Amino acid sequence: MQAVLILGVTVVGAVAYGVAHDLITAHVCVEYFSVAHPPIVRSDYPAVYAVVWGVVATWWVGLPLGIMNALACRLGAVNKWSASRYVRTLIRFLIGLLAISSTLGLIGLVMFWIGAVPMPTRYITSIPNHAGFMYDVWSHLASYGFGILGGLVVHYYIIWSRLRA
Image 1: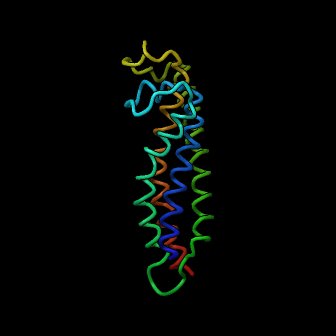
Image 2: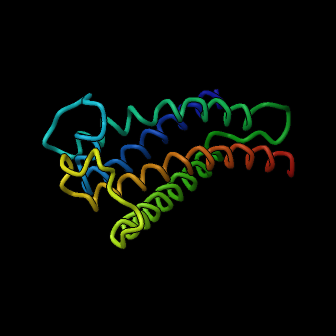
């Protein structure tokens, strides 16, 4: 039962992270979703894009990560992690990921402002908020990259922690 809870909490955590992250980025530049993404929803409200894309873009990341981490937490006879112990590690990871992705979004914004990174030409006329769009692009790229990398770090941290104890 603990393994199922770990799997479920990972998927829910991934989706919650995705929605929280997208609430920020959809309010910075809604066109990141309404113009630069396939049209799965149409709305005048950034929160609608945040919820829809937050779910669509993250549940499938949480599923394999949850399976991997449930196995890492529960396989073997000794030093098993409970779902409640795992949740604390997952929450720290997701908060850190939000901080990293927001910081790299700001770095991308500054790099755009100083001319080091250009606006993609295919969006120059269709997205008026160039600075906000570049923040969103960098923030999302960081979220994907560090999310995958960090998910693996969490996985190996669980294994290391169990072996160390």
